[in-house]
Amino acid sequence: MTTSPRRYHITTFGCQMNKADSERMAGILEDMGFEWSEDPNDASLILYNTCTIRDNAEQKVYSYLGRQAKRKQEQADLTLIVAGCVAQQEGEALLRRVPELDLVMGPQHANRLKDLLEQVGDGNQIVATEPIHIVEDITKPRRDSTVTAWVNVIYGCNERCTYCVVPNVRGVEQSRTPEAIRAEMAELGQQGYKEITLLGQNIDAYGRDLPGVTESGRHQHTLTDLLYYVHDVPSIERIRFATSHPRYFTERLIRACKELPKVCEHFHIPFQSGDNDILKAMARGYTQEKYRRIIDTIRDYMPDASISADAIVGFPGETEAQFENTLKLVEDIEFDQLNTAAYSPRPGTPAALWENQLSEEVKSDRLQRLNHLVSIKAAARSQRYFGRIEEVLVEDQNPKDSSQVMGRTRGNRLTFFSGDINQLKGQLVKVKITEVRAFSLTGEALTLAPC
Image (cartoon, rainbow, N blue to C red):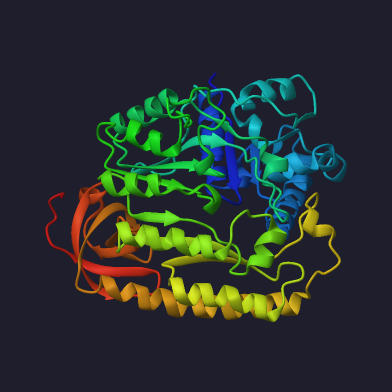
């Protein structure tokens, strides 16, 4: 008699790093004989890969967990796992709050999922949050896309921004070797992937922890060196990287992006605030003037480059005048896209303990005003695409219109056009832009043969 395979479900909250971790954990589970289930209620193993950057993401996890914990009381063979940053931050406190949990594991332990589940199978409740040296993962991730893929290049973060929990929950910086990164990319190329995003919490720090310096005393391994090293991986057509930190962003990196044809002209560089005193209180290590110089340099080399960023409003002590400095920066730079958030105090961060917290009303008002300006500026910036011919990498069908496919330009602008997904998925297509919106475009394919 054959037994049906166990089914698993993963819900991912938060950043691209978490999505990449979830894909790796899904790969491990499928190697163990599990099958993916779209519906968590049909799964016998449920994993929540959590984010603790903002309080509402954390609260959502607890409400999802509550529902499954009830189910476990009737279904003893249900395995419940909390992974990611909330797991790292809360540790054993999570077990006290939700005793039905089988496994609590921090992000550094993603590659150890099989080993940890074996311990759970022996009847143990496991908390894995101790710092470890991250091991190279030999399991193949279960990728969510067949066209684009994430490749982690550096884990952790050594920065100490006063609002951020990432260093506490993701540990110190650990870079993968260039050889391991290239090997993963080469395999993805063989599997038909066309675009790779190199990922790091602070990707510009890549290589600082690897041994070796050049004759001039420069670190031998930098993000710039890595881009040159992996640029000619066969079959990979496009390379992106995220997330950058203004403190370490160099002209040498910008020059490499211009020189290397596969590297897309899209830069994601968070600025967080346009006010120097707030940046100092955040411990960001740069001024708004330095940030502006970086953007000016990028635009000197690549006038058409897309710039996206992150910004926080309502940081403790932020005055109206200081907030207006952020508005001024957004007004002047004209970002293609801006991820905005109202400040949310996080446990274990210095800023959470400060007494000069702002009211929710003030934070909400500032967020609305910033978002309004962002959409006006993004719409104006979008106008440059009208009538242009853009290269679009087709990723999927438009979920709202099955006669259309969708993909991204090199500048990361979501673009829709008529076409058959079965023919076009993974193809680079020249598209004439006929309609522009603040954050997306519509066009007509000039040729349905690949570029």
